Length: 159
Image (cartoon, rainbow, N blue to C red; front, side):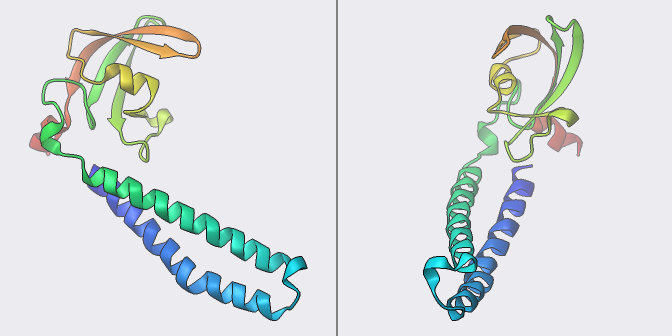
């Protein structure tokens, strides 16, 4: 799972680097040829885009480095962690819900994929089957009972 995210980030980095080194310099050069830079919208837009691309590249580089630090042996085998699929009973809603804990890049709440950094994700981390988790949300606290758990290790063995 982190490998897929790293691959997507690397692809985005490659596209942005191409834009930064090839496309934007050509746009800036073309805009400079138009003359007076103080009122040259094309020039200012290209320079703004260049700054945005540089910032995004720094952000992606940091995130890629963070993902490279994920050590599978540090992810618990018997508790909720990154890559876990967990079925809970939401006491407030009175229903069973299944979540898959993923990285922030992969989160898709509608598909049941929640980030480990989300309020629910943080509350569920390191919990075992049979334990309860208290989720603190802007709307108040919610209690969830852990009903079942499949860790990333279980999925790796099954796959």
